[in-house]
Image (cartoon, rainbow, N blue to C red; front, side, top):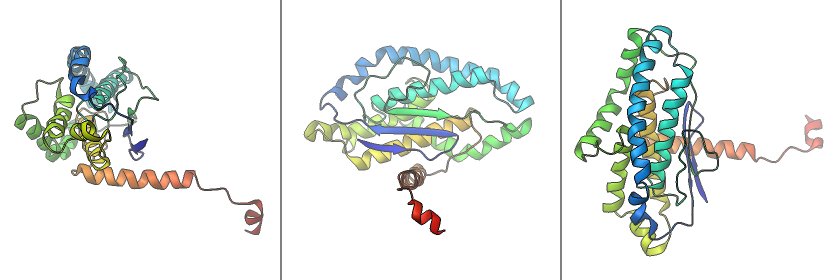
Length: 246
């Protein structure tokens, strides 16, 4: 199993390549996900309402109400699992669960730490201007590929990957021929998905950490840090004699 894990930061998007994958299931996943599409449409509306309710509280106190934060985070988590199963990555054949909560053993996971403090007053809106380049890119993607109708903002952007998959040397095509998922495309898709989720989390006040403009840059940094942490965690302990020598 190949794994990509995000660097430790307020918005952590994790993805495990869940092989072996079916050679044909990708062709009917759009149909299998119809119940999720209906539910996520309603949840997407709820997400916007929750943001509208949270905004005045954040504006005056700098704090995101906990119960609204948990709901909004859950919607993004649900959408990420659906996107990962379907044409946002096609990297697992495990059907996504119907829950807003975290599912630790599912191959696609999303964790967002509730910020202790957010900018207050006009500073809250001014701080979001930092995301203008990323926001324009996300909006351009949605407009060009006419995917705004697809389960709301997050899935609309992630659905761009579906078009890329089906047209340009797709993982689906490789799966059909060989039964294997191209590792380079997996890393690229996850880096892009991670970037989109982080931008949306920042835009909707779930975090005050703005990701870099280049998704592949963020993905490479995350991979290097993950490898470093993995090496430190698995480093063999020093012998007692060696410790005594110091």
